[in-house]
Length: 194
Image 1 (cartoon, rainbow, N blue to C red):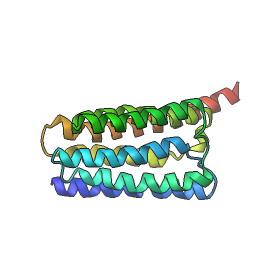
Image 2 (image 1 turned 45 degrees about the vertical axis):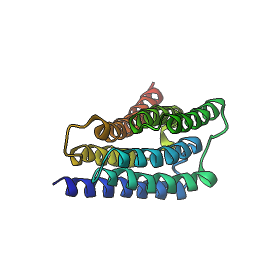
Image 3 (image 1 turned 135 degrees about the vertical axis):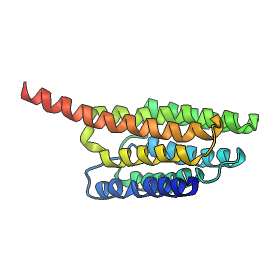
Image 4 (image 1 turned 30 degrees about the vertical axis):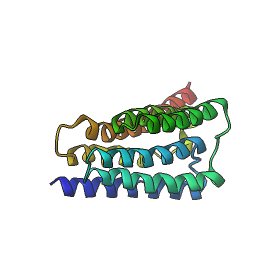
C-alpha cells in the first residue's frame, strides 16, 4: 500500500504543475521568481536529506515536486514577477545560510528543519503576492500539491518524525496558499459590492 500511495502522491504533485504551466503560458499566472528558485534548491536538499534518513516511497513526492517546481522556476525567469525586493534578497541569503549550516552540521534532520523554515519564508513571498493579486496564482495547483503531500504522509509507513515532517509541511504550505487565493478573491468580490 505504501508503494501505491507513494506513486500516486508523486504523480499528483508532478501533474499539479500542468494547470500552473498552462496558466503561466496564457499569462494568467505570474509566479514569484524568488519563491520558485528557493523551492527548487530546497527540494533538492530535502530529497537528499530524506534519502540519508532512509525514505523510500515517500521520496516520490519530493522527486515529483522538484521536477514540477524546477520547470515553473525556469518559466518564471521570463513570465514571473519579483525576485529583487529586499525580502526576496533576504530570503535568498537565508537559503544560502541554510545550505552552509547544513554542510557544517552534516545532520539531515537539521537540514530538513532549516529547509522547512526557508521554505516557509519563500512561501510567504508567494502568499504576500497572492494577497495583493489573488488572480495571479492557480488555485488547483496548490490544492493538488496539498492532496499529493497528504497521501505521501501515509506512504512513509512508520511514525518517524524525520520522514513525516517534510510531507506534512508540503501539505500545510500548499493548502495555506490555496486558501489565501480563495479567501482573498472572496474578499475582493465582497469589497466590490460595497
